[in-house]
Amino acid sequence: MIIEEVIEFLKKTPPFQFLDEASLRIISSGISMEFYPKGTTILYQDGPASDYLRIIKKGGVKVFVTSNGNGDVLIDYRSEGDAFGFLSLISGDKSRANVAAVEDTIAYLIGREAIMKLLDVNPAFTEFFVKSFLNKYIDKTYKEMHNKSLLYGGGDKLLFTTPVGELATKDIITASQDISIKDAAGIMSKNGISSLVLVDGDKIPTGIVTDRDLRDKVVAKDRNIADPVSGIMSLTLIKAEARDYCFEALLKMIHFNIHHLLVVDEGRLKGIVTNHDLMMLQGTSPLSVARDIESQQAIDGLIPVSKKISNVISLLLKEGARASNITRIITEINDRLVRKILDIAEREFGRPPVNYCWVVFGSEGRKEQTFKTDQDNALIYADADGEKEEEAEKYFSAFTAFVRDSLLKCGFPLCPANYMASNREWRQPLRIWKKYFSRWIAAPTPDAILKSLIFFDLRPIYGDLSLAEELRKSLKTMLEDQMLFLGYMANTITKNTPPVGFFKSFIVEKSGEHKDELNLKIKGIAPLADIIRLFSLEKGVTETSTLERNNALKGKYTIIEEYAEELEQAFEFIMLLRIQHQVEQIEAGIEPDNFINPDKLSNLEKKTIKEAFKLISRMQDLVIARYKQMIW
Image 1 (cartoon, one colour):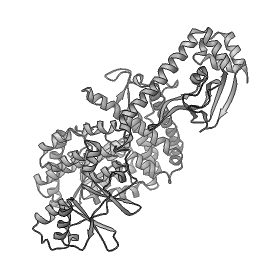
Image 2 (cartoon, helix red, strand yellow; image 1 turned 60 degrees about the vertical axis):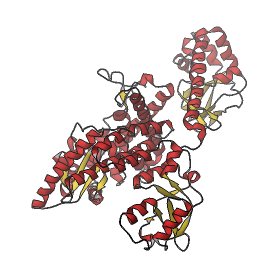
Image 3 (cartoon, rainbow, N blue to C red; image 1 turned 45 degrees about the horizontal axis):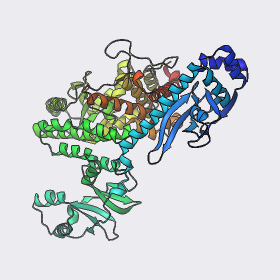
Image 4 (cartoon, rainbow, N blue to C red; image 1 turned 30 degrees about the vertical axis):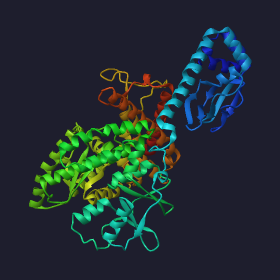
């Protein structure tokens, strides 16, 4: 090694920058250098103490500890200029943590004797290490481990850690699908059960009959109890795998509006799980909110129920849920709320003159809502002629205004840009929607690109879903070989650069209400969603959520194949940071927003979000390289 090169490096690296030239030269003359390939474990928790203080010249490492019952707890990421191994070096007994290279890493090694001499004679050098390592990292480690222990409650019986097979009732009573309704009711009464699994001659489940079925399909309809029970059973197409976590079962029960779910293990019946089981597991389940929504028959009844949705987010966050799991469950609940409002609207205004489909877009379309955001919706109705179309427009004008006002009462603010079905422009027959999409693609003006970024995330949630599916199929055909349009879209989305400056400092708002803050949604989540949407449109991927698109692209796009895992981790981290921030605001009585002050983040959070922003920059460079020949 060239001594002068080492000296120059140490002059820029705290705490060596506090040393005089002579001390730096003595230290540098005894330094060695090592290379660690990505994935190498350099120090092992409870393993031999480090004989060296290692300073990262290039690359990066993660420092983490392993706790019985709690798994790995990440302490920190270290990058260029950071040191590791100090605590075990001075203690001399064992390593306190695991240290592993997260990329190819080169480190300078300074021996224990040299470091101990510096600690004896240089107070500034000593103070730096004591404060940095003892206070900052070790205290943080035990705090995180304690918090994690509290959140997970010992690791048992929680929604996101419990396989549904563990919760399912094992002793299932079954009966032949050929028996009568009367016999089925008798079996249920005799055994005190609320549901009966029906099987065919090979003992394969074919359906399920519940107390609800007997009430709604037999008693209410005055049906002959001698009829075969198969005539009222619900088909058992909806099942949960025993290895799935309980939240997956929860999602299915909310989505399909069912209260009993069969659990299978490699196709064989293992048990049954009910909404009551999940509520007992959790204490207060999102199922209870979904059920409250379903039971309401008027908008005034939905208003107090809608206020409970924020509590669900806080509950899921405290249970240690991933951000994507939280948003998926909230999406299901919000969809249920919107569908109930539309159902009430249909009863208010009568049968619509033509079929229609209610669609959502934006974060709602991508299934990425957290707390209630602006209304982003539209209406597609079936093509009609003359008087029928006039009748449809008159009906849907009043209908959508009612839905808009009802959503507002339930806490969904109006869209400032008026991207709502109550706006005549976004309440159109299918043929007009096709013309919109075709025109935007053929003439990609800035306004056309903006609308494409919004509406191409459309997701149908109510009505004649085939109308939206036909529009999406048309869009897929329209986009084939439209690299010029995609080039303009690429040009637009890459202008939204991550908020990190040349010296790795955050670029924040310079004035106004959010001075010294940055917008996690606009500068973090949006660029990731934009990049993955762009690739999805090119490859004809029909999924709308960012992570579903990312997963679908793995086998179709080389760039995504290489970066898929990093993109998912970055998206999950930024979204979780946003949700945590909003929960804290709500608990403090503050209206939730997307702005955070990076100075209030922990060192670990700062490093992680900078890595996420670096990934976004790298992906934007790849986008530019791919599409630049189109319009640049």
